[in-house]
Amino acid sequence: MKTLLSERIERSGPLTFHDFMAAALYDPRLGYYSGEIRPIGRNGDFFTSVSVGSLFGELLARRFFREWTEIGSPARWRIVECGGHDGSLARDVLDALERLDSRAIATLEYVIVDPLLEHQDTPSLTLPAFPHPVRFTRSLIEFASDPLPGIAFGNEVLDALPCHLVEWQAGTWVERRVALNPMGGLAFETCAIGDALLLQALIPLGGHFPDGYRTEVRTCYQSFLEPLVLCLKSGLMIWADYGFNRQDYYHPDRTAGTLRTYAKHRAGENPLDHPGETDITAHVDFTAVAEAAQALGGRPTAFCDQGTWLTATARDALLAQEGHPPSSHWRQFHTLTHPAHLGRCFHILELSWNPAAPTQNLRPLTL
Ligand SMILES: C[S@@+](CC[C@H](N)C(=O)[O-])C[C@H]1O[C@@H](n2cnc3c(N)ncnc32)[C@H](O)[C@@H]1O
Image (tube, rainbow, N blue to C red; front, side, top):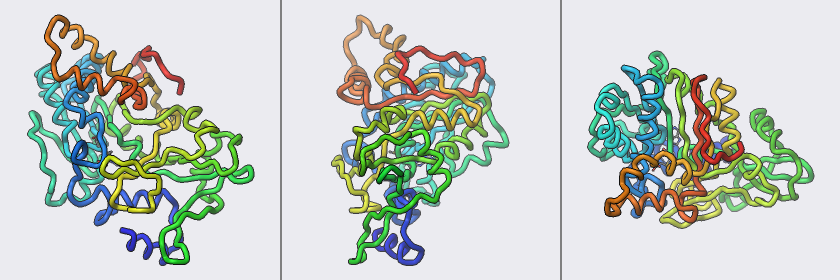
């Protein structure tokens, strides 16, 4: 991958970090997410809420089922899962929906969209057994001509979208891009910002940063959400990820940003070291995601930490457990919701395109 990137830079000049990250993660031949599906969890490079166990999917299914009933139990509805990876979360959601209501699952079209399917012409994907058909797709274009009421969601997808790197120097932002050093290795350099979208995205950050302040900015949230909006009618979106509202993200004390690499459960700081072999991720600016949704006619209806959201979603199931011996679900619930585990650093943003949808009062955080 390093050779491929070096040749590309030699041929066409330095790469924005956005283009570098897109290649390092999603290059069809050598990207981190190409080829064999990488395991997530103990045998992989990182854990997610999905690898904690089936409870995360079960609680999402409860929220989806509530939405289905609130919109009048339509005769056809659609769930679009973004970044469905190896299908584990889909299996957990569908198993739970099947237990919840036979009509809800019989009328459901479940779609997984993930760029790694790009490389799966003869899928090396070992899919779990689904209790209901799942459609895998590389593009949502075919669904836009038949929009259905329903839900789009994703866990740890937004943090995997390519970002730009910027640095505050002498009262202005410059872009950090990837060039070649005199020895031919990959190295960062800074340059003036030419990208109009990036310049626009930097305006709300203000201008009170210490010299050398480095951070990340994504300009792709609107283009990411738009195809999802087109294939849903008065839809709901649910995004679970690590991140902050804008004010916390771009706090002047966060001088080195949030960009990280992950390999074998070890976090690294330099994405140029092993492109294609490590995951690359940066936190999510949830305010920017909410604004992108607003530009597409939606509005945020809930934003809170994962612990709060899952506890509210699990309320009925928890009450039903009262008096029963503790099950393995309790351990999972603890990991997913405890502030010292995944409960506080992960957040959930709900976005709605349904004018009648109520705003939920889940100890809300400010966007
Ligand atoms: C960190 S993994 C999370 C996988 C799974 N959702 C989980 O929580 O275990 C990120 C996933 O997002 C996918 N992804 C990246 N960009 C995407 C996009 N534009 N649309 C849909 N999926 C995307 C990646 O291919 C990868 O499967």
